[in-house]
Length: 167
Image 1 (tube, rainbow, N blue to C red):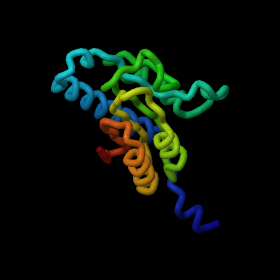
Image 2: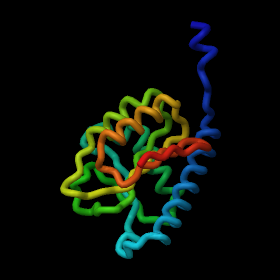
Image 3: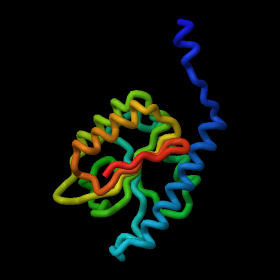
């Protein structure tokens, strides 16, 4: 029990909010730069899509829904639309899709979700995972799932001061 307690890291709400706001700033900067250099003129004014699994009845009690509401409040430079499926007609090739999480430990749940993603036809997206705190193991599992599921143009995993990239 002492070992568990000594290895427990408390993250205050204030630390979380500071980290999450920093991630949003980095995300906005990346999107602006990406759109300025994009050759695809149609994609420059496209909305940002946030994946929320609305098929589950309790989705509004989940952390990613709360984070979506916070993200929408803080990220005012882009139109934000939620999706529950990648077969939605609103989403097009080269769109930016965001997954939100407050903390990822083992990465099991997120990596399974990414590995099992199904996208219609030949659509390709840039996926972002914004997560304020993530373990190294969680990052490794997610990147492994990304590499196995070859649907991605790019996926960027952002957490606290670090960003891991897999292509």
